[in-house]
Every structure is written in structure tokens, then in C-alpha cells.
Amino acid sequence: MMDINSETPSPQSPDETCSVADALGRAKAELENVQAYCENVRQRAAERLKTLRAASVGDVIDGTLDAVRRHPGASVTIAALVGFFLGALFRRR
Image (cartoon, rainbow, N blue to C red):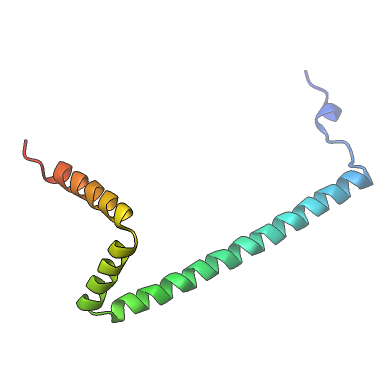
């Protein structure tokens, strides 16, 4: 049988209380930083979505061609991966 007093936590020393308070303060500051970062990402995504919705098909094609000219290796790799997955998706059995 367990002693009830052994399950009761001992009182914390003032140093332990300060370190817990400091840790909570740091955690709160980190949470606020993450919230600000997430809000910034959300705003940028909303702005890009507005820009994309306002763009015509020609603008999208021109942007894609410009990206291919700037990054030909990555473009070929992405095209190969997309082709592989589309081929696997539509393969006849």
C-alpha cells in the first residue's frame, strides 16, 4: 500500500519557481513569434492568390517560361516527376 504523503509533491524552492516562470515567459514569447510568422505567411499567401486570380493565362505561361529559363535543371526534374506520377496514375492494367 502506498503512503499518501509520498504522492504529494514537495513545495518548490524559490529558485525552481523562478525557473518555471522564466520558462513560461520564454514559451509565451516563442508562441507570439510563431503566431506573428504564421500571420505573415498567411498574408503573403493571400496576396499571391489575389495576384494569381488577377493574372491571365498568358501571364501564367510567361511566368512559367521565365522560371524554366532561370532554372532549367529544376524544371526538367519537376517535369520528369510529374510525368512519372501521371504515367503511374493513368497506367492501364
